[in-house]
Length: 386
Image 1 (cartoon, rainbow, N blue to C red):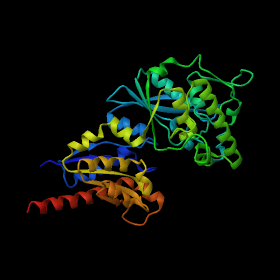
Image 2 (cartoon, rainbow, N blue to C red; image 1 turned 180 degrees about the vertical axis):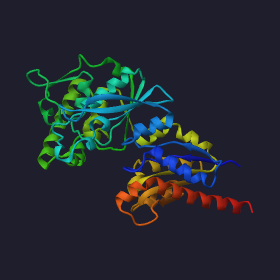
Image 3 (cartoon, helix red, strand yellow; image 1 turned 135 degrees about the vertical axis):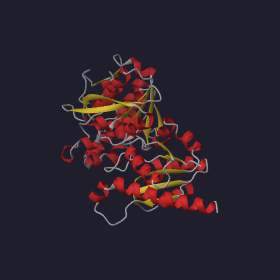
Image 4 (tube, rainbow, N blue to C red; image 1 turned 90 degrees about the vertical axis):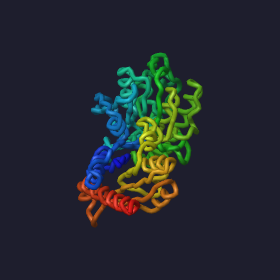
C-alpha cells in the first residue's frame, strides 16, 4: 500500500528554510519508501520565514519593493508574497523594519519606525488583494505602528499642527491625528495579524520594558518609550475611538500590533493557527494515512507557546496520526509536547559539532534522521503483517 507522508516543519534558523527541511526529509523517507506520496507543507508561526513558507506551500509569488528601512534616511529591498491559493498577500514587517537589518551599534528604538511596513501594505493593496496577513515578529521599532499609519496617509500633529518626526521617542508630542488623507482602501481589506506575543502596549510586561532593551533601549529610554506609548494610546482613543492600551498582543513589534488594531480593521490570531488555516494543513493531515513529520531548529518548553511543531501535533492528535519532530537541539521541558500529541522528538546531530558545522550540515542531518525514523516505521509495519 502506498504511504502518504505529510511534512510540516518550520525553518531551522540560519541553516535551512522550511522548504529545504521538507526536501531533506523527503530524501530520507524515499530511501526507505521510494514510492511514498510526500505532501510538503512548509510551516511558520508568524515570525521569520512566514512569507516564504506560505509562498512555497501555495505556489505563490514574490513581489519586490524598495521601502524605507527602520531609519528615515535608509531604504531596503523588501518583498511580500501573493499566495497561489487565494487573493491574499502575506507581509513580514521584519523584511522592512526588522531587528536583524540594523547593526547592533546602530539600534535605537527612539528613532526607528514602521514606515516601511506601511509602504508594503500599500504596495500589497496596489496588487488588488482582498486580504493581507501580516507577521509582526522581530521588529527594530517601538513606535506603536505610527510609522506604518503615516505611510498610509495618517498625520501625527503637534501643538503647532506640524507633523512630528518618525520614531517612538517623539510620540509624546502628538496632540492630534489627522486621518483626512488616509488610504480609503484599508477599510475594504481584511487584515489578519499573525503573532505569538500577547504583551499589552504599556506597563511592566509591555512592548518597551520586555522588548525595548534588545532593540537598543537603555533603562532611561525604556521609561520614556513606555510613557510615550501611554500618551499615544490616549490620543488614539480620543481621536479614533479605539482603546488599544491593554489589548493582548498590542505590544507586539514595539506596538505595531496596537497600530494595526487602531488604524485598520485587523484581527489578531496565533501565528501557527493562521498559517495552518491558510495552507489547509488540517485537510492534508486528515487525508494522510501514515505519519506526519514536523520540527524546527530547537525545541523546549517554549515550543508549546504557539510554535509550529505544537500547532502541528495538536492537529495530528485530533486525527490520531503519529507525529514525529526533528530538532537541532532538544532543550528542557520539550517532553510537555508528548501530552499534546507528539509521538517522539529526535535530535538530528550524530556527533558533537561546532555550531557553524551543525548549521552547515543541516540538510544532511535532517535527511539521515528522517531515514532512520522511517526505517523503524517500516520494520514495525513488517512485524505487524507477520
